[in-house]
Length: 338
Image (cartoon, rainbow, N blue to C red; front, side):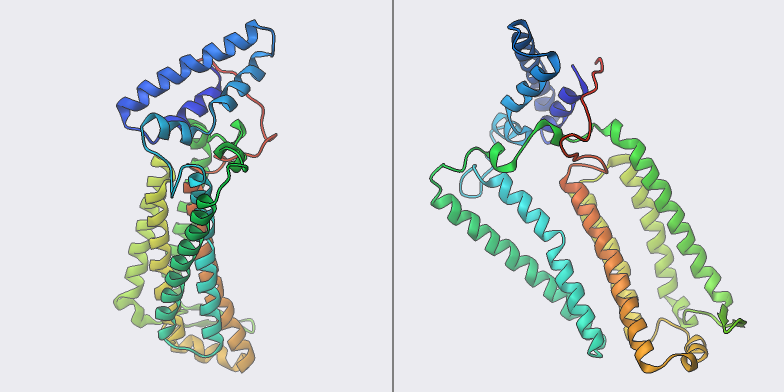
């Protein structure tokens, strides 16, 4: 078997229980091999072309696994289930967060206070619920009045063997780089929290010994951030060992929210920066500059956390880390022995 066949077997069996996984993998391997041999012996194609044709004939691995395990993929019927699920995941991954971030930005510009958090959270949840409801309704109507002219699920998804996920051992080198980068940035963040307390701030070429963050935060919020950094480091190691899935994507969203919401709230309430630092920089900034910098800070924190959350959701939707969904033409089949 080749790597392409291995990837198809992995994609088709990864959601099944262990016993069913081994049985289906064995049956599929035999079926694919027999199909390839028959096509090659008839002289119709080369082994590589015969392999791709055999996988295309089998169809989308998720549809095959569902039929094997007797788990119909359907909303009203099976035709549009995978299309509906893919579009729902894609839209839910960024639309609610984008609307919530825009709402937060508008409220900050309007001079809102701590109530911004409640408004932003409720707005994001409302958008997510409405998006799921109306998208589901549209697909239900499409299925209700479907004439069958659109075609099969594979045709709707535009599925080809090039979209098969990489095997876990292929993804691990990429995850190692992500792990190292994450741990380095977390170490820098922890060092900054300690360093800023010594108050090395440069204004007009002169050094002033004032802390950047309010010293009162050491009573709770700064230790809270250190704990959050430790949790992020543990989570990065866990991702390296287990790869991305929906449970990990949800944990990633929670960790980002646990950072963004308190930091934005402390900043809006004027409790994040030390009074000494504010008094030091205030003479150098006018009201417009303060407002612009405030918007940039809140928007930057929201954007970074939102992007990281979306990145985890996309990786989970693709079935793993970077490189799990390649576009046609990005690579050529590489034959390996099993």
